[in-house]
Length: 543
Image 1: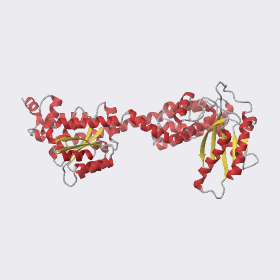
Image 2: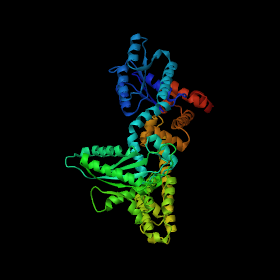
Image 3: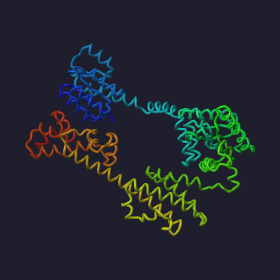
Image 4: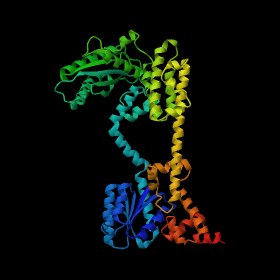
């Protein structure tokens, strides 16, 4: 919805134009008025103005100066100048001031309406889909490195994805590795920084490490770098594949990567004077297995193996010792359940919930069951506290079972308990949202009923319920099935009918009581709704 600001130092002109556009059936406009330039600037300082309809000749600050001031606040604002003088100098001045159009007051309403319609059309074109998408594309290009890093970090953290969804995102973010192929991981760490490196230079040195790695890896691999923190980084890599080659990796893949990383480590030591440790994945993995693979590599940094600096390890010995755990990735992703709760995304929540709870199938997995129960209890307790749901839900479900698995007789009972708790949380949140929305509508209706003669603009009503005007308009229409403007018009018509029927007040007075300070506009408004003038209705009602 566009905003129109009408400005003139003659109140009768301002009020007339305000009523014209506020009730014009061809426009959906928020209309505001001001009787001098200072008041107009105050309105523009508080609200975005799309179209400025202003007189040129005004005391203290003229319309051209006002247009320049509003343009500084809202560069996209379209200005239409009004004047009572058909003077070429005025026309030149207004056009030089950036006016979209120039209308003589003596020409009547029709040219003014046409000028505003022209401005609204131009705004729509400028904000068209193609224009917005074009601007978004240029912004996306600048943000690509950050967006690419965030998405790949989500995959490492266990965010669910499919091959198709990954392929789409990889194309959008220009990720230089293939979404459908297996990927290998190399985790790196700077063991200690040189004494002469300033804190601000650390990122620079990490990129220098990456440049060294690219020199060695690029001839044979496609590589993506992820900076995890100041001293940690990750490389995701895939062997370059010639046209016609199969997906199977070369038999010497592991040894080839290990040899290259050894050269990278030596170059960092010799050229950058940095001691770095690396842990290499012994074999490529599917993207679904990437979080688990990454966790195992990070675990090796903690465990070490004989040395605490310049380590060069792989996860191969973990497999030989049986140290890999298939469910580690699931446990890591359990924290995503809290995100899905906060986002009110029941579909994603229950899909991941079933996957995680389904990992416990045997009595021998008691440790895994305890770990999952602990995580679920912590997630739900935090959520219930933040949303003040402890007391409301305590009346429906036994919350003591959050804290100990001993409250349950089987894993099936644990699963059913937390599923029921999630269902109650989602339902209560929806009920609360519905109640708050209904309360907003009730408060607005109460204000309208008690203030039919006052400012009932969308902005004023939105202020009452502390919402943005556009969002309030959408919320109101969603809850009631109609626009708030239609509701206000209906209430004013009903009140007008009652006053015309039951009182002897003059029609002019009734119009003012309903916010219509111009008798012609009150008559036009009433006749449009009832097909009778106010006087005709009064005569009919009292006949």
